[in-house]
Amino acid sequence: MIIATFNINGVNRRLPNLIEWLGERKPDVACLQELKADQKSFPVKELARAGYRAVWQGQRTWNGVAILARGVEPILTRTALPGDPSDTQARYIEAAVNSVLIASIYAPNGNPQPGPKFDYKLAWHARLHRHATELRKTGAPVVIAGDYNVAPTELDIYSTASYDDNALIQPESRAAFRKLVGRYWTDALRSKYPGERIYTFWDYKRMRWPRDAGLRLDHLLLSPPAAERLAEAGVDRDVRGRDGASDHAPAWIRLR
Image 1 (tube, rainbow, N blue to C red):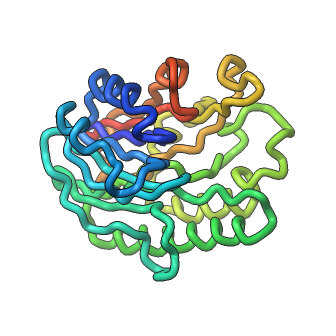
Image 2 (image 1 turned 45 degrees about the horizontal axis):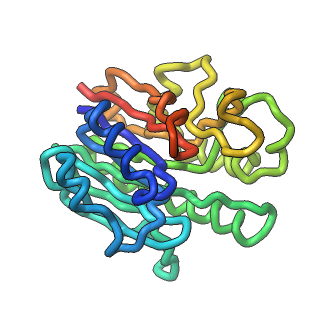
């Protein structure tokens, strides 16, 4: 079973790129973020023609998340992260696919920091940690996949001082990610490549893609029953170099 995550950066604008990649990788599940489309504008028919059924929580501007499943209907379980009823940003969706519980998340960026956006980022991560604990305690295989907007360590960002003030690498952001992973969750990519620089995001500015000046922001965290089944993990980084590409590349795992 292949489960992937892809910050698509505009699902309608990048639809040809998305469908091309789906045909190549053929993931059983694809978690999408940054749809930039409201609920009625999601390309459900086009994706169905490509063999994928979907659940999604749309929102204009920068948000929106979805879960695609190949040949089966995802069983929707949540459309929002619990813990703050006033939070209307579309950043979390959860569904069961082939007996695996899967969440697609788009964590807040948090810039500029310090300030309200950074406070929201940290509060959101705290809510995610609480909910992840509840999911883990079910004993089900769980995968929380998406754009966490955290580069967890220095291995997850190219050598630069230009991000020193960025919310993506602040000590508080990294501490929140470490707390989430804790003793129980497995960071799939890092577990398979413990000492390598692996990136999933390259900004459009300053020739960062040609220079391989990237960050690892997209992660797949696995509960213990899912981690026991982990066979492979990787990043389809060539997708980032194609015409009209998102500034993220898809990351994926294969579960036995």
